[in-house]
Length: 301
Length: 263
Image (tube, rainbow over all chains, first blue to last red):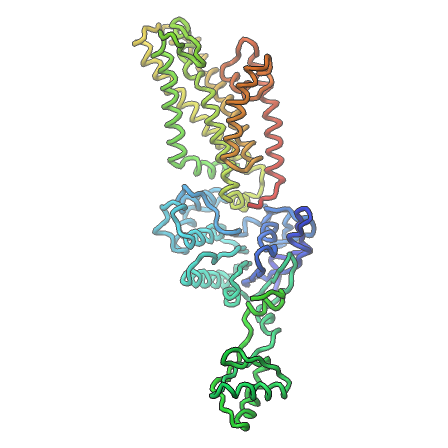
């Protein structure tokens, strides 16, 4: 898969502060790539550099094979929403999109299509300042889609959306990716990225900690077995059985959580049965993206 | 550039700004010109700063435009406010980043915005001229002002030169507003500081320090509209203003083009 965005040692310094520190990554074409990191990790600054809004202190990047020092060569094919939706409060949603459509030389019919697509057609004439946060986010996504982009860069697009709105955006992004658009989306809602992102770039303190397929990140961490017995006092015995087999476990509430592969489940069940212990729950669980994220960033939940 | 110009006009034509500004300009032009005639025989004076403008002065070919040129300073401050607000709001709203994604050539974006606002300023000047000249024609008869000279070729020629000078003055004020808007990136600060300098500080300085007014940008810009005064020639005011605008405009343009867009 070729890269639509390539960053090579991209760096941004503000005085002594290094906001983005020699960041290197490749964003594959036709996929959804999540850009993950805690607040202040350098995500937005990186995105701003990619869009030509902030000048890098060092390093380089290319979008659609064009260097970011020449944004006019690639931005006509890029849609972006940076750090939340920003529009003119006194103008309607439609008028706000028309300002950008006129600037980018896109037909007004495209504005109507997009208002329909993001579900704002019936509020198109309302002033932006009267929109809810969810509506503002949807207008931001509509603005990003104006140029029928090859690359879509979205900074926290589900911020402020209710569960139904999040679901809609997730489906929209998936359908856009399926139509061939490469999507680079930052979010601090890791569970969202776990659902939609094919690839991930994890950053913290301005540095890339992981980049690759989402499944690779999840697979890199051991699955666990959650065990519950008919008698709570049996958990200690099961814990000893697992430890003897080389898999340590921890009793959390009424459950024993053992760091062990799925293949150990049958063996454990048999050993417990032979000791007269009845297991009422024996479940394989994989670490969530959030757990993997905190593990590689060294943070705490 | 044309796309930027037309895009900017979609913002300028919003009713509160467009109708509001033109309405205020029309209303104030009518009011200030009306006072010239209504207070004609009053002892307190009927012109700016208590100046007495006589019936004979009003009867001159230039008399038809006295209200209009008297309003030029206020027109300039309105232009300054509009230019500053329209520019600085792009920073405070965060909309500049959207504009730059769609038009990454920053000089083109800046030039297109500037031209759009200059065309808006032209409209305000025309509306002011219509209001002021209209009310002058309406009130002249009631105050026994002889209007014969108003309908001569000399008066018609003066119309164009006055219109041009008032427009130049408004554009100069507007350019300062835009430059300060870019430098400060806040509409309130930009307008407050600019107006405080031009209306208050320059007034005090020019009143207290003899001969200083020929070095002050606000004084020079307002003199363009008045064509000249007894001390400073029109050419001097024009050249002085051009030098100031080149400095302000140069700094602002360099900042707009080079500065990171972080908000």
